Image (tube, rainbow, N blue to C red; front, side):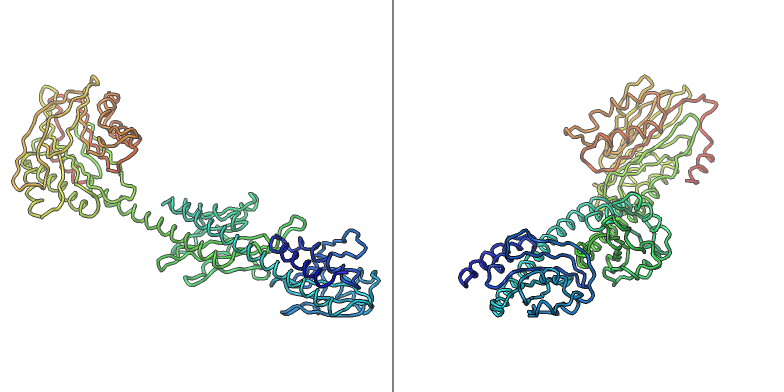
Amino acid sequence: MVDDDTWSGALHRLWQAASRAEEVAALADDVYAPLLATPGVHLVVGTRWDEDATLRYMRALDADGGAPVIVATARSMPGAAVREPDGEPVVTRSAVAELDDAAWPEAEFLRRSPGASVVGCTFRLDRNGWAGLSVAVDASADTEEVARRLAQAVDVIVACHTGILQRGREARRGADDALLAEASLQMDSSLDVEDTLRRVARIAVPAVADGCLVHLLRKDGPEFVAATHVAVRQQRALEEAGRDDPWLTSLLTRRDDGDQALFLSGAALDGSPFAGPAPAGDGRHPTVVSVSTLHARGRVVGSITFVYQRPEDRLPDSAFLDSLATRAALAIDNALLYELRRHAVLSLQEHLLPSRLPSAAGWDLSASYEVGDPMLDVGGDFYDAVPRPDGSISLLIGDVCGRGAEAAALTGLARHTLRTLLEEGTAPGTALSRLNRALRQEGASRFLTAVVVTMTPRADGTVLLTTCSAGHPRPLVLRADGSTDEVVSGGLLLGILDDVSYESHEDFLAPGDTLVLFTDGLTESRGAGGTYFESVLSERLSALRGSDAAHVAESLARQARAFRASGQDDIALLVARWNGNTPSEGLAPLHTLLEQAALR
């Protein structure tokens, strides 16, 4: 017999067990034992029901101390719907003989008990189901006291279940927050649109869903980009659906900027590539699909479609999906904007440089340009090759301080000013002085460096080099024997003082020699050890002995990029290899060189 004090102690221990329990079933012993010790109680039976009156679990234990009988099932019992509680727990009393088997699966155990009547309590656990706790009592039992203790035990069970759900939600929320943080890091680490979208799909599976489809919104409708699924075979089907399924295309087209996550299941998936019951026996659940619109900065950029084949309590909520969609949309939009900017910058950069270099007998000319800034601001490096009236060719290369729109404007001004003056036959030193004056008159806030080298073939097969420099790195000459020389030059930067003159320095090229002009992005590429590429430039250039101009330009740019561990400056190279020609061949006629230049 359990008196009030003993019952109070048992109830206290029950509350303690409830605070530690990870599932309600773990409380069974602490609930059943003190109830069975109550005078007149012979049997305790507990049941667990789904909301659609499907019996999921039954546990029966009698006072004889034998092992409990546990039944796990999925028995549909529509008649039990009359017992389902609407809100508060419901306590009932009835004779065992009056129990309806259609509503009371417990009857098969209760009838075996010597007790003549039943005290039962049904109660809701959550929105997805309810439970029952019933005891068989004989005539000696105080049914009011039994009902009171039954209700108190139910209070503990409900509180335990609520606590388990709350802890589960908190754990889920923590996991969701961690997933969102990781998703942001992964998506923000790439500025490539397709790579960002593939990262979205990979992050989501299987953490969020069993399958994921990602689409971009284009002018002519949704464009499939990425798909992934936990099962390889189903991933192929998912990819096919993402590319050309009319049902999915129609659904995604109808989504707009204001839509939150949309969940679809059952009949709502009829006609879709996701329709049909889950295969029997493989543990999968009926398919649920959610669609989240990706909208950022006031416009729709795409959509994420998640496919679930898991229990309902493992489906993400709308708030989580909306947060994930917002982060994905911003990452995708950033990648799209970056792509547009990259195309615009590259297009502008192309217009600031010659589309091609002139060709002339005996010369092999080539250039290379490497963008160094990962944010792709327009750089200030420029180069050109200009045919002159006397049949010579002037090479020019320069570098405007800084990046961006102002640097681009000065780049265009400097290149076109020098080109025009040199085409007219203006001496290189005079051309640089007039450019300096133009910069000062324009009030340019940035300075620039430049070097002009005029190459004039001579009757003996050599080439006279006339060099004028305005603070620019000195050009190098790769001799035919592999040695390297620095072309002497020097002068004040452009745009600093009003009146500046520039001196010329002479050198020569022999057949097989190569002249290399470059910007400081090449020499100032800094390695991991702190050394600059300038320290190895002569050695690297010597190794290119016998190479044509294109190979020299591309190889030096590639080597500097591989050498660089820090530094983001652009690298421009202009290379001229003198192959030699007889005096009778000379240069191409001036009008031919000018026609070639006009076509650039």
